[in-house]
Each structure stands twice: as C-alpha cells, then as structure tokens.
Image (cartoon, rainbow, N blue to C red; front, side, top):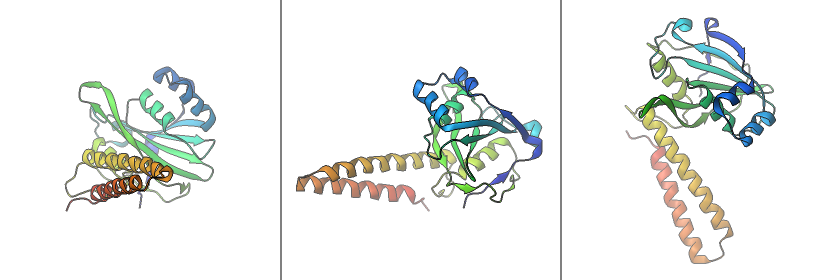
Length: 223
C-alpha cells in the first residue's frame, strides 16, 4: 500500500505557477501547450523540502525536493506536460494531481547527468492509483538527508518489489524493462488479432509467451 506523507507547515510555499513561465523555461511544442490548455486548470508550487524548511542536508544531486499540486480539467492525461515542468525546473519534483475529490502521486526519478552536472536525466513516470483527497497521511520519515528522503518518496511509487540490497537505480531500470516488454506484447497481440495465417499465429503466440516469461522473471526479485 502506498505511503502518503504530510508535509510540514514550515515547508509550505503555496505559489501559483503561470503556464507562461513554464513555456519560457522549457520551450514546449504546440502539442504540449495544447495539453496544458486542455487538461491543466492550475499549477501550484505547494511545498519546498529544503535544508532551511525541514532541517535535512541537501546535496548536488538533491539540493531540494519540490511538491507540485496540479489541478486537472479532465481525469485522463498524458505525462507530456509533467515532462515539460520537469524540464523547466531541474530540481527533483513530486507531483500531486487532483481531479474532483480524488488525487494521485506522480513522479519521475530525476538524477544528475554524469556527462554534464548542469543537466538532469529523467526516468519514466511512476504513479499511484486515484485516491480520496482526504486519505490519511503520516509525518515524513526520520532520515539523515534529502537524498534519502527523495529515494524514499520515489521508491514508494515504483510498482515492483525491491530485491535484497537492490539500488533504486537498478529497480527503476528493471521496471522500465518490464514496461518495454509490455509494449512489445501489445504490438504483437495487435498483429495476432489481424493475422490470418495459422503458422504466423503460432509464431506470434510463441513470441508473446516468451515475453511474458521474461516479464515474470523481471518482476520476481532475486532472493
């Protein structure tokens, strides 16, 4: 079950972020701008988890953690506008998306680019199911620094179980491999549905079974 955390009042920021400011920083395509217009009602920079607000040391990788509240006009969405915000603001961000009386957590793991420390690299996005807005929250865990806190927040969103001693980076890579294989299966199943030749159907089914076996192995953490 996902852990929901209550952020301390000392970390409250509460600034509305105009979409135009995101556009200035990230230079989104016309399609992404359209996504903002059609799907995003309001963007609020809700909390800044920083050394001066929660008394945890930061680092080059995680100097702060930002909590953004996104109020949606529609429940269905793609993550293109979230990627745009992540590009505009290089700090680690946890998004809370709100629609009606529901909300969900969404985030990509953001790390320093090894080739250029001024840039950041994003993983794919992880998310929870839709949850009631009045769901119980607990205080932030007692940790030593912001890097540990960020890892805790992201780790809670990754849907697969961690193997013993497995790093978050390794777990994320495993998760992304599973997603890639699932996309391959979807493509093969679409081909299978259209295929008329018996021999080709047999071959496609064999490919699908193999990919499903690979997913099972990737999902099961090594003991």
